[in-house]
Length: 202
Image (cartoon, rainbow, N blue to C red; front, top):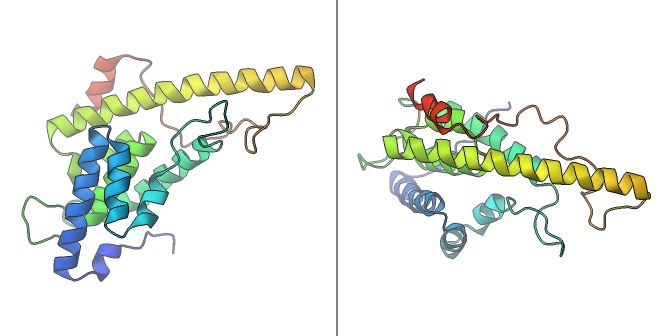
C-alpha cells in the first residue's frame, strides 16, 4: 500500500495530544520564519528524526553548504503531504481531547506544505482554515516558487557555462539539471498577488 502510516492512530490519547501540541508549536514557528527554533524544539523533545526530515530547503551555496538536491527534496515533501492529506480531511483525522487542537498528522502535513510550497493541500488541511493561515500559505508559496525560478535560471546558466568550458561542478548533485521533469512542482501566479489570493475563494 502507498498510503501513509498514521502514527497518531497508534498513540494513546494523551500521547497524541502531546505530540499534536509539539507539532502545533513547531508549525507556528515555521509560520513565523523561526525554522532553527522549530528544529531545536523538536530535537530537544526527543524527535530529532523529524528535524532531520525538515532539513533540506537551504539552496546550495558557493562554499558547498546547502542541499544540491533541494528540488528533489521539495518534490518528496509534496508527495508526502499529498498522501497525508487523505488522513487530515475533516471528519477522517483522529481528534484529540482539546477542541482547538487538530491531530498531530494534520500539523505535520501542514509543516510539509509550507516547506514545499504546496498551497493546494495546505488549503484542504484543517490547520489552515483560518483566513490568516490561508493568506500566509498562499504568499509563502508564491515567494518560494519565485525563489525556485531564480535558482533554476541560475542553475541552467551554470550548466551552459560548464558545457562550454568542458568542466564539472565541484559538488555532487549539481552536475545535472535537478529541475527538469519535475511535473509535481507548483505553478505560481508570476507575482500577481491578487490572482494568488483568489485561491482562498476556490
